[in-house]
Image 1 (cartoon, rainbow, N blue to C red):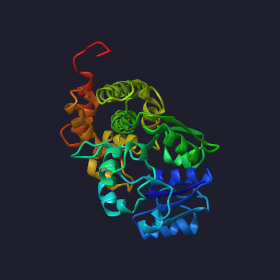
Image 2 (tube, helix red, strand yellow):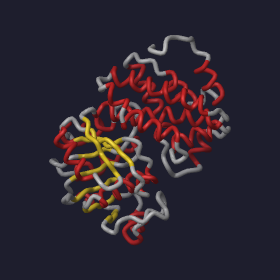
Image 3 (cartoon, one colour):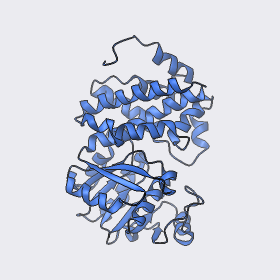
Length: 333
């Protein structure tokens, strides 16, 4: 098959490396810490992010980006979204100029308001035919346990999307292709923010009606922003939109849902962040998404309230009451 470099050794990068290995590819992972890379290569397990889950012996890891990227056919980018720019500045020039790059990241960059594909294009000079996105209802632990799941591979060049589809199709992981990169990235980024709001509602003790209401209105917010930015509305009814949103908002495995739940229970943002090594992308991206909405003249009240909560301007109970007390209007609005 192919030699694939996975740049990032967190939970999702590791789970996706497993998918790639199961599909018959030669996989090399890069990680920030030498000791973690050594452990992955020696024990075939990621003890920090997916402890107890055996990885295929064909997966190797190294802290040296030159070693990982040498001779690669495909580069998978799986670092935290707010660290992508600094990482690409360090080793982006080592990426071969002709290979496709796949983003697993779900965030909007602070300050620039760029989607991850836009950051990749800026730092590497790659055209849209070389930049793809994999997204969907893909909780890392379930993927690593090989539970059945589907996803989408988005690329403006459908031939590239189909090539990557073949490299990731296994007995338990089914990828579909779409050309809508904008919609795929917005679905993945905004759902993290909505999951924080759902988590807050759960932490406050509210039930399924509250959760369903936030999920549904959150999907409407996402679609409004996506349409304003040129996305295909149908993307938000598929795996990259509704599918990812439901999984992230419903599962205790979701970092963003869990983060919001802790906030609803009374912990501060710093207390919750300090208790885990995993990144809840929505905590960073909520500000960028809220600003992006204002730039495009799109009303996103859930996102705006979450950004205010994370900034310390609202309390959890005020987030919920503020949403409910807004002026009543037609659902289509």
